[in-house]
Length: 124
Image 1 (cartoon, rainbow, N blue to C red):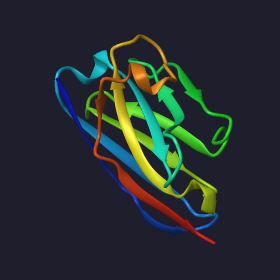
Image 2: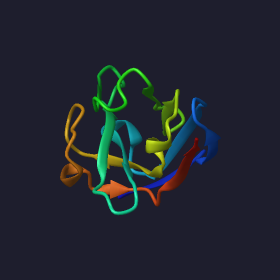
Image 3: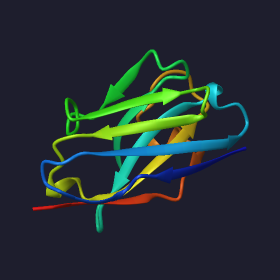
């Protein structure tokens, strides 16, 4: 079992930046692949990116490639999502999640543990 807590969300003007953090407690953080997802009102949960257990591999959705960067610090049991050049369409609740699968899985169904989410609003 692992518990995940996101932080760092908020209101930002379009073109601005935010960094989200997700801190884990419980079982060994370094055994999980970590993913970031978001969900806007009336829309399905969307994969943003994932990072492998060691941090050596990352995988991004086309919608955020080049603007968002995932990193992790296994010594701090924390994964980060750096978001630059934010757009109004990036407004959503953002979630981190942990998966037992090796690598950078994209499907929400393979993530067993989820945080509570943090709101990000990019205003025009």
